[in-house]
Length: 274
Ligand SMILES: NC(=O)c1ccc[n+]([C@@H]2O[C@H](COP(=O)([O-])OP(=O)(O)OC[C@H]3O[C@@H](n4cnc5c(N)ncnc54)[C@H](OP(=O)(O)O)[C@@H]3O)[C@@H](O)[C@H]2O)c1
Image (cartoon, rainbow, N blue to C red):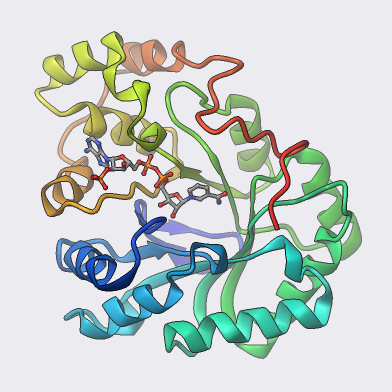
């Protein structure tokens, strides 16, 4: 467990749920929980908070032993809308609270994220959420939150994998007591997985490429949230705590990053999502 800047604890790895919906989605998420994942990452915009809630109800693990994250979409960044959308998310998931609630995208041209942040601060006071954070935030947006409210997010969830390793943003987060969480930690199963260096390291450590990547992210002191619909991969992705990547090999992986390495071409300063 890591300690957040609000004193609460968070698991070192989580389970992504994007695209897991309906009956098969429930089955995949129940399998993930039963395989040992304790953190689940959903969002209003994934339209699967109901699926996640159903999986929690069907699993053999107590709600209090799980850490559930959801996210507020940009179209609800006005204060009242934000509180209502959050309540709606909780109703859909059949939960009383989220462990972590994040602003999904900064959408800086709209300039609404500071108001949404104030709503999250109050939502925490109301008991609707335990911890609050953001996704896809750049330093200038975090500074704005700090200057407006004096409260920095506990988590900044950003695209992070070997082809886009976010060294500057990670340092900024760490210097400011914010934990970096990695979305698309496996590059969404793209060409990252066939990279020759990663495949050589997988052979060297007798691990899969996915395990090398997730272990690297763990050793960077970030929190990966890999998604898999398959039980065998869910187990594989969790099985990263019995080996250590050497400093020299960590450096080799660090060199794989590219300026245009984003898998989804979503630069938070430009890309908007509501
Ligand atoms: N905040 C944001 O803006 C944001 C944006 C994107 C995503 N997210 C969150 O981050 C989570 C993870 O990101 P992601 O779903 O985009 O991508 P990801 O976790 O990097 O990759 C998932 C893909 O990789 C495959 N995969 C999983 N484990 C594998 C393994 N061991 N070997 C080979 N392939 C493997 C999966 O296929 P199978 O399912 O077939 O195994 C799936 O196609 C999402 O689910 C979501 O919760 C947040």
